[in-house]
Length: 216
Image (cartoon, rainbow, N blue to C red; front, side, top):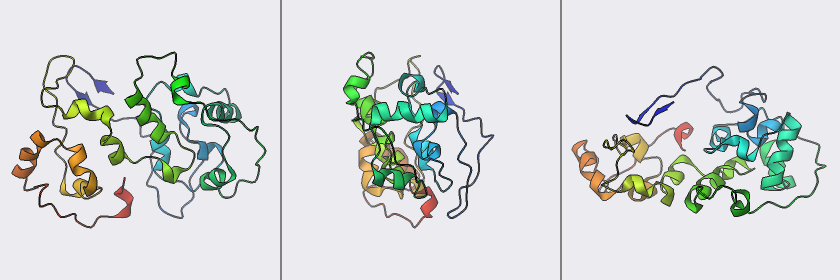
């Protein structure tokens, strides 16, 4: 939940949350249908946090609003095109039904033609997540470096209410170590002083070793 007046974001609804452990089976019937990643529709029980990347930032009904699991897959194929055998195996190597109508992917500009408010920069964000192969979905840190978020990096940017933005770039040492090659792209020069006050100087920063589980 986002309070656009104060800029306070509350994360909620963790009813089905669990720790994802490599090699441990999970349930495939998870997540609201409109937001369900295709590997879940293909019945995968060996998935990771990439299923969360798939969830659209825009109105899901605008793109994929199937009335059943199969219909949901049909709606996805109408936009992303028919998945290749390689993509199906990436989603679920145990899936054995490969008979799908051959449909070409729709250009994103055409998909959002009726929504002129959705900019090319916003479409770029969405396109990086809506990918069949979970391993090829854009990471969170890669996404933060996109032009879509440049406005937040400008020193004079304020919230719609006129209030100052909350701290956006107070990354921890661990967070800066996830993709150190992107730190300069994500963090604007005017925010570096606050990091230096925390003992984190981007000019001399050396990444620390972190667990694979947080590498996104």
